[in-house]
Image 1 (spheres, rainbow, N blue to C red):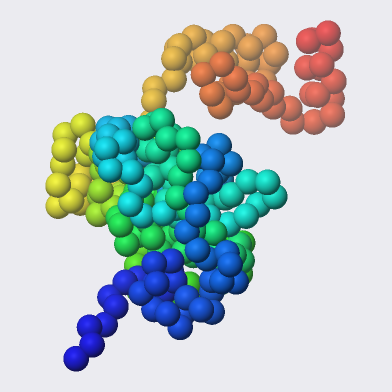
Image 2: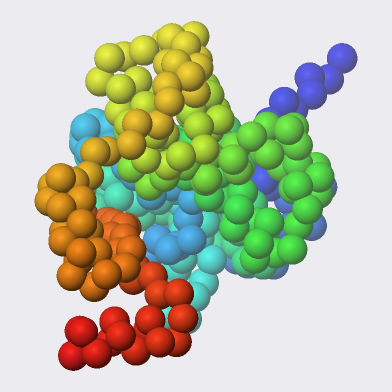
Amino acid sequence: MAVKNKGLGKGLSVLFGDTEDVAAKTAAPEEKTAETVVKIGLVEPDRNQPRKDFDAESLKELADSIREHGIIQPIIVQKKGAHYQIVTGERRWRAAKLAGLKEVPVLIREYTEENAAEIALIENIQRKDLNPIEEAEAYRRLLDEFGLTQEKLAERISRNRVNIANSLRLLKLPEAVKTLVKEGKISTGHAKVLLSVEDPAKLTLAANEVAASNLSVRETEKLVKALDKTPEKKKPLKNKVAYDETEHMLSRKLGTRVRISRKAENSGKIEISFSSLEDFERITDHIR
């Protein structure tokens, strides 16, 4: 019995020849699919590559391996003017530069922008190279730039639509919390619980508490419930007595009711009441 390919889509099969019929449909003409060697300075990363963060220590280890054994798996690129844009293999390219290589092996292919984005996402997901925020941002790009629905995207990359929807929800997190997720200080499970907190300031405070105290997801749920039960405390107005005394003083001098209300620490408004046109003229004359 043939063993089924359990990958997340056809992208890697296309790249590495696991499925010949799919490769034939997607690859460039035969003369452009053979492995070749190009100067490393002619190869450049794709600015839309979903992976943005590369661990320095991991890159150093790969660079040491490349220095000793070379690049075993060629980098997939497509021609862009005088340069070659990376479709998959940016980490290998970065490590090769770190190792001091002058040339790198490449496979030159031709893809549409949409296919290149899909393949880059699939490769990174299969290798678990993306942090949860990078993965969500890659989904968002495919949906927004190429007009895909979540259902169509799920079908194209062989992912569950619910998983894609849950991933996209992470993009609603405040930037400070996204950073905690990117750095692995809070997990996707923590983030999903925290998303139930509507106030961004409270959400950020809770996320920092989760990271600092290394709370479990269950403990995070308890923390969020406690936040919901905590009544909003109003800050006491500074110098409230002074404002009350000023209200009384102005009321006596103007012979009418005066009310001072504060909107912020150093701003507010003064309301002067009058009961008739004559009363209004009397008050304005007094002020003049």
